[in-house]
Image (cartoon, rainbow, N blue to C red; front, side, top):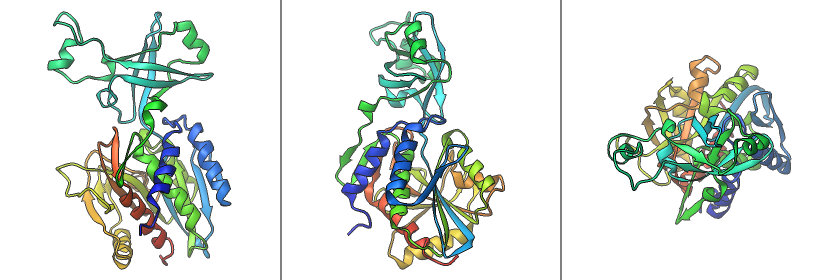
Length: 348
């Protein structure tokens, strides 16, 4: 039997995915997370940087462990609105327009949300049209696309659409899909990890040390929330929950086995902490893979690089199509939760 019921886990991730949370405008998902913590009866708060934090008091409060899962998602940000009402955008986090394709996006205005169509231009054209080169010669970039809302610039202004407005995939396109024991969805990075935090909040009681469960803010734009939290709160051990990209360059198998990172673009993780996690996994017969990643960073590696924590690790679940329409095995997500639940009960 899986540690977490797959149906319940799928539903938990789905609920989180369907709450927008572009970096820096995470209020919609904040309300949900804080309500979940309140329903579980755990002490929780939002800090000044926008992190949603739950504290599980330990027997020994002189030592502390934090587990982070960032709640923000990638997307786009409005750069300009033409007099005709065409919306021009640039990326927010590691987003690429060709990943989303032409389709509905939501513009989260100050006073109203307006849906529009991410547009690339027509295909029935010759080399006289600028769109022709994207069919044959060059990659599509954000400066080449626009959003059609069919609103006037005044209507957009009334809704509070302006430079700085966040843009995310439209909600009706976000609904996750179940593929046997897999889940397919936008923003599994990192809503699936937030679902793990909620499951841990439900299961952890009287751990040996204080445990902080942190749904961190603005990770996709520099781990801003985690850096603030680890600067304000002394943490002895930090573990980040993340996705792990499946690619031929990495020795990672798809399926139920989580991945423990040894190194990413920001540096190495703590080897002794990794060994402790491996020992817990081995004793519980939880499959575990090891990897080194490129073009990747986590709350943990960034916080350790800047000297905010002495010991950090990153536990992840293998994921296809990262930063796109992602696919992951529910068993790998459940096993991440199982491993961390056991680890939180060990003496450090």
